[in-house]
Length: 114
Length: 164
Image: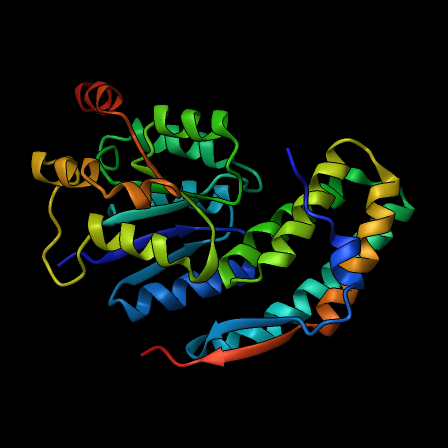
């Protein structure tokens, strides 16, 4: 089974653009802000070796990312969730900064439905 | 006309998005933020037209809630769409066996979810019993392309629940 490579993806210097239905524009700032906060929560949890918190937060992020169309967020959160289940601190330590980097870099393009 | 949907979702942003989408479709949305709140609603309000149910919930899980609904005299026939970020086959099978009408993966724009909601509860028509033969046939005949992200309960399980 192939897994996404978030670190590699985040290191790619190309632009990161996510297209979202324009009617959802009012929801996006809060969505982005909450995801960034969650990266911080997971970083703290990693320091405390609290894998259960990381698993829960990553699971929520996986669903939210999918619902809003942020597929890369979903991929990264999936990897982190799996690593948390396995108690794999090194993968989480590698992928969390990549997720934070991606969230800071991504550009949202609002598209009107025809 | 009963166009009420109970949305059981603990993730705040996902709930906001779904509420927005459903209200735009003309549905009235009641939102339960966890399994305990949903359990209270099952005991206190009239059954909605449809339930959208996340599986991973605080206090009472989506699976437990689904069983509770299927054994409740007034709610047992309400269609339940399980909405999940997980495509783990055993989870899908268990949800369908426990009485879920359909299992939909959270995905871009939630378009498939909306199609499924429209199929089960057309907002422009009066609510009809979910388990009517016509409704079941329509669900079973969903195009193959939609089955990739939507799974429906097998006919044998439906009969079992209908008879229960």
